[in-house]
Length: 164
Image (tube, rainbow, N blue to C red; front, side, top):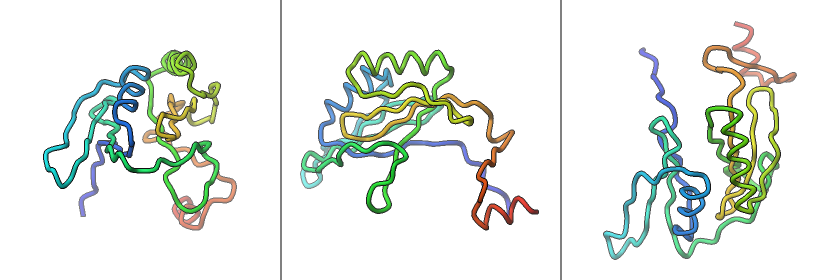
């Protein structure tokens, strides 16, 4: 059987109740180009779906549902109740890009972290106007070329694959 050749993230679809505020944050503060819009064609299904480029053919997309109740702010990597989406990490090209983005977010008034060095990536964390946790990361290594396994007590499935 032929293996599947994955081509990376196409788009991540999220929800907002205020598309204008969301576009202003992602396009104007984060400088992500707005590359596509659709919606409001069917009276029985009023919605918007906007796409902002995160590079290399991938985008972050938002559905606007005006009556949706957005979740409260949540720190990235800290569990909340139940199984849920935790955060999205968007890659940047260099440490200089990461620092420039951190400064833009700070100047905008966003609650943004200092640079965190995870060994595998260096990151900053912020929250968008919808309460969504966002991580911006610069890779410290190419995981496809050099996988990184650092869990001192990996689950059995990983133990088995590392043993073979």
